[in-house]
Image (cartoon, rainbow over all chains, first blue to last red; front, side, top):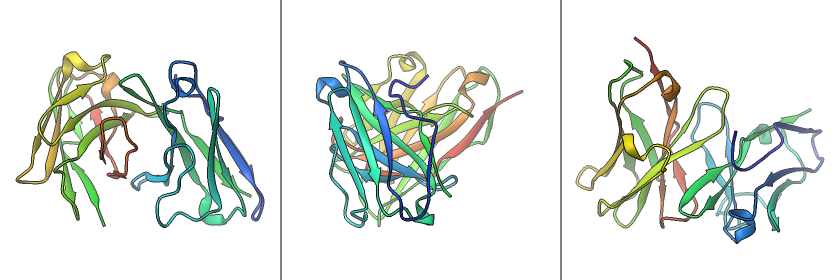
Length: 109
Length: 118
């Protein structure tokens, strides 16, 4: 059971917008800790997608965006593309403990 | 381009110690932390702990009694030892590099599957 809760799966057609939620509690996200998002294609290294709640590393398309409110955070992907099909997981802190979401599999229909 | 690569045995016997190494290329580990994270089959990610290039460590309390992390700056590597392995420790083990103790994980390795079985 992961500390941060994500939906197991989401799906969308090419060109559509999807969102992935990440729900925590008052001791982690709600306490003000940053939320980071990663994209993971099985068999490859996870890739940092969003850091500090809503910042994109260099090279990440602006189709990807993040937000945070209260005890939750969200990742939004607009203009869905086939290459976006992957696992996505969120990460934050609970004190000195680094915590993760259970991951969400995005299927592009 | 910074790359991380985990190396170590794919199979460990129960009660033995797992030893993994993470080699960083394309960038230094000086002034950086290295974290170890694992994912058991069908389960979520679990942070094991981190080590700073100076050697200071921060472990997940749930595993701290069995974990030892170290760093070798001359080889640009950081290492994990997990003692008294059981079947519950079967997982894909990842290493990752980050700038500060509580910061994002900038770069990850692709992971290595470790199975605990006699």
